[in-house]
Image (cartoon, rainbow, N blue to C red; front, side):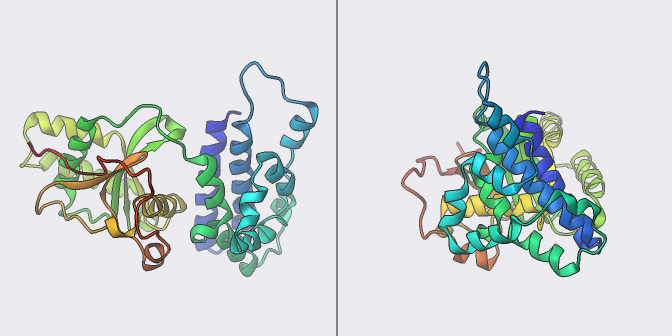
Length: 302
């Protein structure tokens, strides 16, 4: 099993845990939350294994364990987790998870909620800490300007009826490709298929697009990824945007009005962004010293 598979499994198991938690299946939610952390840590560790290099026997034995303390040490993340008191407190809860939880029929609602919260809470969640370090990485290929423009066309065509809270191009490592990610409320309840069908219908009927533009928008739709705005991936993306660009950068850009106005970030392009009050309060007052000169750009203007 390779690193990309561990990364995909980590996010998938965390999403499944949240679905089980919301449905009242607490034992399964507890087990899968811990398993998500195990997969995320193994994704980190996998990065240390270089081609044509044989790891030591101890390294291999430590890797093939379910013990989270052992995996944390092997991943080299102990110092990072322990540096912040709130994150360290969350780890002390998470570290007690065991793969034997899969046999439990007595896991309580409180145990399941506490473990999931310890993994996903804002900037102090254990899963978020691991994802910051290794699960999401920089793109291998730059985002082409035409992709940004095509993304605008697609979003403008659907924004009257699809009320997404965040929309951006983002490099998605599990598929080694750029994905046009949109977050919306109610996706988990209604299912993603409903939204994909609606978006394709809107593109088919979009009168403002020429046949060539419609073909380009259809191509961008192949890269579209619709997720619930409360999913762990959506929260992680919001935190990355806030952390990189700084809270002073943000406003809501309504696509049918005004110029096309978005923001480049290190590994993507943000069309629209909506943060929670807490996320903005936790953000730095300004972008970091590596802020790019092309951070602000009017796409499509001549």
